Image 1 (cartoon, one colour):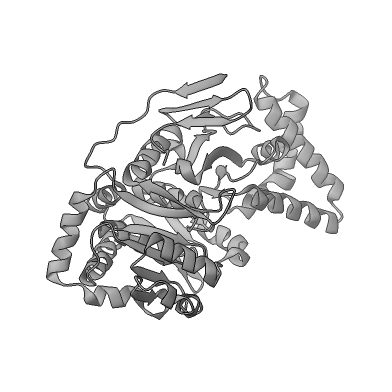
Image 2 (cartoon, helix red, strand yellow; image 1 turned 120 degrees about the vertical axis):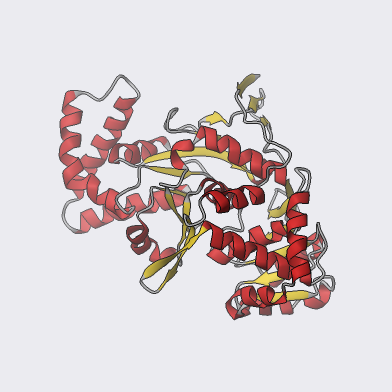
Length: 419
C-alpha cells in the first residue's frame, strides 16, 4: 500500500472561525476591497468593514425572524456577491447554510429543503421563488422566503433591532469548531443526493492549510474572478480563502461576459474546471485557423509544451528558448491577454486536466495548479503549489493530510478537512 503524509499542518485556535477572521480583517484593513460586483460597465468595490457591517445587519434581521442557533437556511442562488453576503450572515447568526444549485427542479428543491429541515429559503429571482412556491406545502417548516432581486437584503436589514444586533455578537462568539457550517448536497452514487455535513473546523482548517500551501495566490495584492457555481464546494472554499486572506473577489455577471470581465478585472489568478481551459485552447486554435495562421499556432503550442517539459528536466534547450521568445511576442501574449494580462496562476479541479494541456498553459505563461478533492474533503485534499509543480498530477496532500492508495486503487484520505 502506497502512503504519503505532508507534515506541518497549521494548528487552529478554538476561537478562530471564518466569521471571526472576517471581523479581524474588517478591523485591520477596513477599506481594502473584499468584494466587487458589476454595475454597468464598471465594477463597484466594497471595503471589508462595509461588507462585514452588511453581514452583521443581515444576520440581525435573520435573528429577528425568530431563527434559533443551529437552524438551517437554504440559499437557492447563482454566483453573485449576495450569495457570499448571505452565506456569512447565516454563519454570523449561528445557523447553517444549505446550498441549492440555481437550475434545480421543483422536486430537487423540495428534497433539499425538506431533508435539511430548512426554516428559511433565500431565492435569487422571482422564478426561483415560483419553483419553491410550487412545493412549499410539502415543506411546511420552511416558513419564510425572500427574493434577492426583490430586495431581500434590505428587507432583512429593516427587521434588525438593537436586541438582535446584540445577539449577533453573542452568536459569533459562541461558534464552535464542531458546529455545522453548511450542508452541501452531492449526487453520490446511488439514490437521492446526500447532504454532506461540513463544520466550522473543516472550513477554517482548510483555509489555514491553503494559506501555507498556496500562499503566493493569497493576499491584498491578489484578485480573482468568481464565475463557477457557489452552490458547489469548490467555489465555496475559494470564497472563504479569498475573504479570509484579503484577496478581492470580483463576481462575474455570467459566462457569456467572462472574456470581457477578465479584461476589466485583470485577475492575478482564476479557478475553474478543465472544460473551461479546453474551451480557451480550442477557441484560440480555431481563431488562428480562421485567420489562416493555424500552422503558426500549432507550432507555438508545441514549443510551449516543449518549453514547459524542459522546465522539469534541467531547463529548455537553446533552440526551444529562442523559439519560445519569438512565439511569446507573436502568440503567447495574446493568449495571456484573454485572461486579463496579469494572471500567472490558475487552479483546476473537478476532473483531470491532462498533461498536454497543463504543459501548454505553463509554456504560455499561465501555470495551472491542478488539485484533487471532494465535497466530503471540503474541496481540496491535494494540490500542485507554486513551489512544487508536477504537471499531470494533482500535487501533494495539504499540510497535515495523509493519503494512502490501496492495492485495489482506493484512495483513502485523513486530515482536518474530512467531513
